[in-house]
Length: 305
Ligand SMILES: [Zn+2]
Image (cartoon, rainbow, N blue to C red; front, side, top):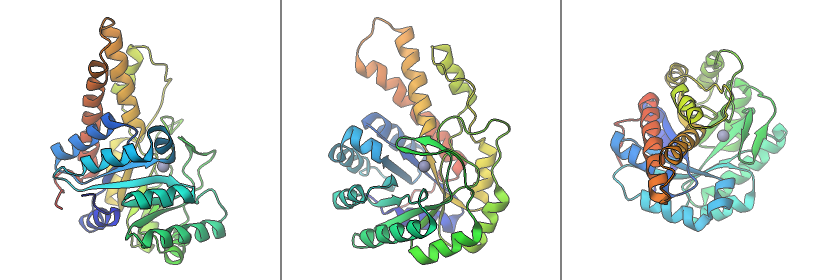
C-alpha cells in the first residue's frame, strides 16, 4: 500500500534527514528508484510531473506505483508541480498520496488562495499538500522560471499559517535542469536557517541534482553534447539537510544516468536491438545514482513502515 507523503516527511522532520523524491516517467525509472530504496532500506517518494502524466498516462503510472509499493519500504506517490486543478483532482481520485500545488509563479495573494484550495481538495482524501514560495529557476517539463526569487523567511511563516500546507518548497539558490550555476555552486544556507526558525513543517529542496562529472564524462564519451553543466555538490546537500531540508527532488541525475547508459550500450553493441539489453543497463545506472543520493540525504536505513 502507498504511504502518505506527510507520514514519510513527519518522520524525516523528527529524525533530521531528507527523503529523496524521484521523478518517474516509465517502469524502468520506477524500478531503479524502488530497487535503490530496498537496497538502502530507505523510505522513498516517487513523483510524477504533469508532463509525466500526459506522457505515460495516469492509469499506467498508478499501476506501476502501486506495484512498487508492495516492497518492504514506505513509498509515497506524489504529484510534482501541480498547476492544473483538474490534474490534482484526477490524481487524488486515483490514489496519489501527496500533492504539490505550485502557485509560485502567481502573485502572493493568488498563490495563497490557490494553495488553500488545493489543501481543501486534498483534505478529503487525507492527503498533504506541498506548496512553494519564491521561485526556483531553470526549466523542468512544463515548469520554468527565468530568475530565482529567494524565499523570504517571514513570508514563509505567514504562507504556511494561511494555507495549511504540510510541506514547503523553498528557493535558496537552486534551479531545475542541469545548468544550475555559472560559477561556484552555492546555496543560501543562512536564509534556510532563518526559514527553519520560523517554519515548523518539512521543507523541500527542488532543482537539487548533483550532476556528477563522471556521468557527464561518460555521456560525452558516447556522443552526448551537454556542455559544462553544474549541479549542487554533495557537501552543499548535506549542509542543507543538516539545516532543515526534509525532501529533496531528483530528476536531472536520473535523466543523465539513463542517457549515459543508453548511449554506451548503443555505441558498444550496435548489432543488439533488444530493448531489454538497451534499457536494462540504464535501469542499473539509475539505481546506482539513486542509492548514492539516499546515502547523501541521510534516509538510508530509515525504512520502517
Ligand atoms: Zn521542481
